[in-house]
Length: 325
Image (cartoon, rainbow, N blue to C red; front, top):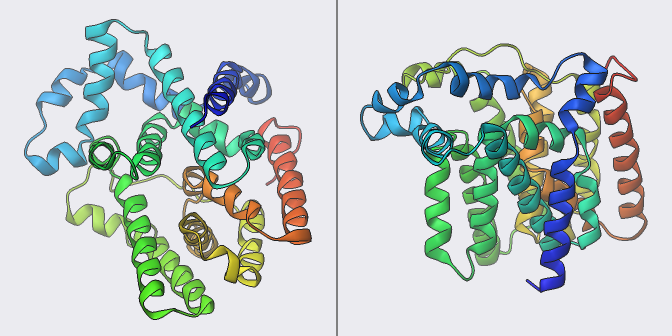
């Protein structure tokens, strides 16, 4: 990476991170980020040392997300870093990695689309998943030159957030599909169909079958509250399936576009059974932006215009200027 590009991306992430997003949210909504409080409380009021010591067996380290609690406990209680500093550092890292991915796949100025409530909520309140996705993004960026480091980062993520398995699984399927296409020269329509079908399968696994699977393996998170996204909120993302199809010959050449298509397919099918989509959209946000940037001609201008208008509506809803989405 050129020094000028590094300075720009670093500065962008730094400026993004020092904006008082939670204060802006609290002014409009009367309270801070709900997810942030969920992450704060265990380290402020609970004995995380006993949580760490109580882990039993290799799979216990994974299902208990041991590394997350160990890292935060070490930085706060052993090194003496403020919990707020640790969390804002995770936010910075998330924005920086997302910006690096977007600039790697498209034009550097496309990072401006990271100013989206989905990304803000993800980077500044869903810290554990944000850290895991930052490491996964780092593993992707470093893979060509530093394969060993890339695999280490990949391994670490599953001890931070078990949801990492889903995103790794999706990308493994993308690689398999690209390999199959290279060997058999698959028709672009089939690649689209296989990607959409795989998204539907993932949606079912994390939706109707989620509690059943987690109960079988004894996962402590077998019960969840309702976190479904409304149909109106998901309409724009579902709409993207149409331009993806008509631009499939160009888009499906890229791993990030197939990844984005699978994510959007998950969102589309989640609407049918009330599945939670926002975290998937947030985690895959760079690939979606880059995929839109890969559209050709007037279609790209049209979709980016729609994307911008939809982002405006998201901000109006986020700031409680407009409700009912």
